[in-house]
Length: 89
Image (cartoon, rainbow, N blue to C red; front, side):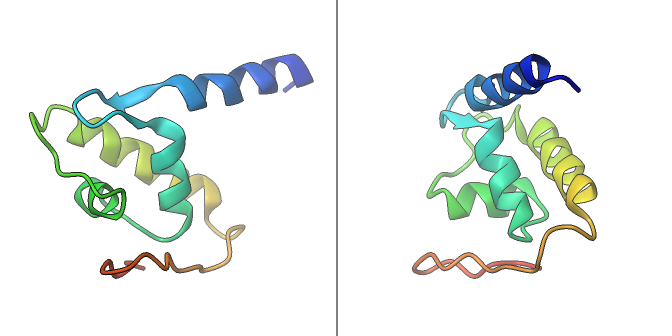
């Protein structure tokens, strides 16, 4: 992928909303997935949000699953150290 296409993709991920109700962006879900979270409801909890209309949960799960697959074998096991929230592995 050339540098312009890569920069464009990175900008898209920063701007793309997965959940309008909670203003959760795709890059936020991908970062959480790299820390070992495997489902959308756990990701929302880590972000301090709760699903409202629930329309986005399937897409959020897809984003998380895609990032976990992309990261498999490359991303070190890390934990999220947020107060009151246990990270999942």
